[in-house]
Amino acid sequence: MVIIRSLFVVVLLGFVATTGAKDLPNFSDLAEESSPGVVNITSTKTVSNRNSFGQRGFGDPRYDEFFERFFGEQPRERQNSRPIISTGSGFIISKDGYLLTNNHVVQGAEEVIVSLGDRREFEAEIIGTDERSDVALLKIEASDLPALRIGSSKKLKVGEWVVAIGSPFQLRFSVTSGIVSAKGRSIPNGSDSTYVPFLQTDVAINPGNSGGPLFNLEGEVIGINSQIYTRSGGYMGVSFAIPIDYAMDVADQLKEKGYVARGWLGVSIQEVTSELAEALNMEVPKGALISQIIEDSPAEKSGLKEEDVILFFDGEEIFYSSDLPLTVGAIKPDSSVNALVLREGKKKTIKVKVGELPKDPSLSFNATNQNLLGLVVENLDTKSNRSDVRGVVVKAIDSEGIAYSSGIRQGDVIYSVGRNRISNVEEFRSVLSEIDKEKSTTVGISRNGIKRILSLNLSK
Image (tube, rainbow, N blue to C red; front, side, top):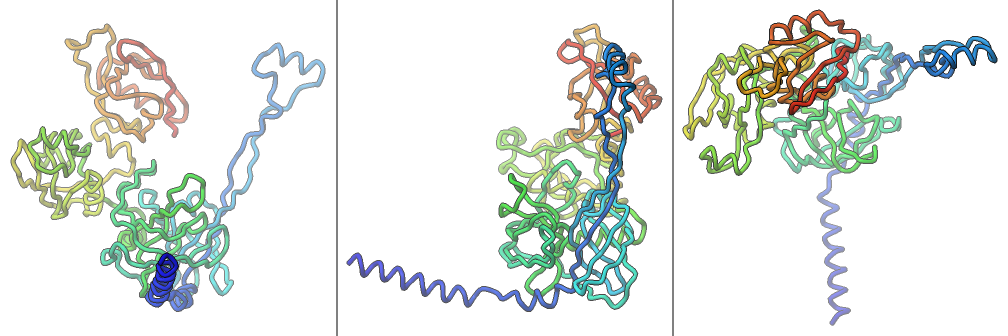
């Protein structure tokens, strides 16, 4: 009986394997037709590195004298330059030579060489780049090029087959396949990319694939391969692509005006947890809870308030808080839209005129102080302040800003900048405007009654 069962399992598995193989798509025609429109990109930039081998005396004049006596005067610190060459992928979007790739493939490049599948090479001009979306638009002087067909990422469904063509590890025009794992992913990673509704796939993507096209089975480009999740530096089954609808809008704006305008609301938001949902009289924890509204922002002018929960914005449901930046960023500045909010247990529709996202990420967080630190400060309430420290209190801080990386935290009292004492917001702004932005300076803070001196580098 056991033998019969085993044979049955083998036969059944063989049947499943045979029928499954018939259902699998064949990518050979797609690869043959689309590969000519995929390019390899080589970018070169020069970086400086200091050679401190001959640095004199280890900073002590007694050692300087010792070394000069026995070895002669030592050479001072030298600065050398060396070229850095990086490679990536890209694809042709028009017959007259326009191409798309990732911003990080060509960022800071002094020379960009585009290699076609027929082994022709061209020096490319960078028409424009957008760091927030990681999209770059290039142009080569050529005609009648094999432009790829552009599809629609909006029509893409989770579970659909997709194909990537690129140059991983400089293995040119490699083809990999997989499925769409998810849509509308928000993956904050330090580059202010929360405005991109990423496509998540399990297509094998590795270094060198960056900027290459992601195809549907019709041979249409539906995304630009951009990032991978990895612990080892190699592929681990999770890849992210920029939706082509989003990327083409970025490309059109770069071509037309050289920069990308995005919608901006001017709020700090947080996730609605189960505990918060109960406190806010919500049946289901969803939406974006407004924790802070920036002064003079579109949100304040429109009448939004702290503790409002945004449920719908411009007709789009806000299920997770990360859905809001994606939705607002896709709206053209100066557009008037409706926001459905939950306020004190009741739903209310508010008309909002969307503003334009500032180019500096710290300014988008802090329109009040208009400084480079990425924080919001207020005058210190001397009645509630138990210490003798005078200054300004940090009410909110951008976790990706200069102030946060320098060690400043929400609730800190800033009492000095560059050895200049601070008593109120006006003095803080005045001192900050006069600080040399090319040099590091000091900032004095008080936290829980304990003073600390931090180093602040405004040139970052």
